[in-house]
Image: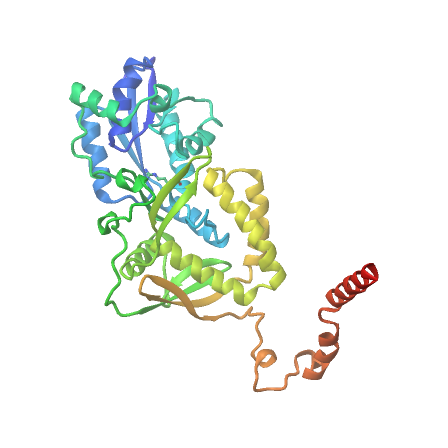
Length: 405
Ligand code: ARG
């Protein structure tokens, strides 16, 4: 390649949006060469085949980067923060900064001067990609948004140019899949009143007739480290739980979501592993954290999820939030058993050396002794309980009487 080649790195999936971006980056933006970068965050194998084939047909050099471990680590950080946004465990959102950083690395290695994505101007992903990229020396290009393209225009353009878009694996839906979640949008699902057909689901089965199953997860400092007593790495843990819990129909969400730009959208998600890990983690926190820690942590967790949704996990506040999360997380060590049954996942057993729970203190069977406290000692507390409300109510009664005299 000549040294002065004007080169742009494109976030490439092989789908319609990114495919039409290739000729447009050359013709409309004047780049000599487009390189593609496909980042592996756990998409199904067929998506890589599709990207590879399309890149070849377009005569684009495509780089594939395996970022599954980095992504899985981030997913587990989100578990420590019990992170969901309006009920959605953030799969797409958390993947974006990981993908954006991987593309930036390739672009630098390949002497690119610009970065491009195929996101529209309506969604969240443009903001998440650009938050990372605009922190670099590179030019940022968003052809679909800047040229105001529609899917219809893109299809016609692709047909005219003979671009390879036939093999699209997603059918009529817009699907985004990674280790943490699979999202399904578009077509008849855009009408919130339409009940989804069963065929929108791929990771979760209809659980009817399936026998319940127990799963035991062991945590160390808030991080899941073993499954049913066997040590396991994050990527494998997530993949295994997606299969096991998915078979029971665990982890389906059908929701209205508030996007960053203010739009409301109808979203369908599948996220079996996320549901299991979030459920188990929270059950362990219930056992080991004090009530005030848990109450305050809800606010911390919500802030973390907000930054996660925005694709801003590099924001300084996230470090500060994680200071609290890691400090309380030191005691989130122990194990939780959850039951997978009929589309649900619920904790059924938990144990930890750090349990605040004391059986002898709570039991109906024993007269306890922890700290030398007896039942009688509660008499004074019971007399005072509600004291201020009684004072207030009495004052109101007296005032009413006085005013009516
Ligand atoms: N609304 C979600 C988010 O912003 C997921 C979007 C997924 N995209 C898709 N083409 N299905 O995180």
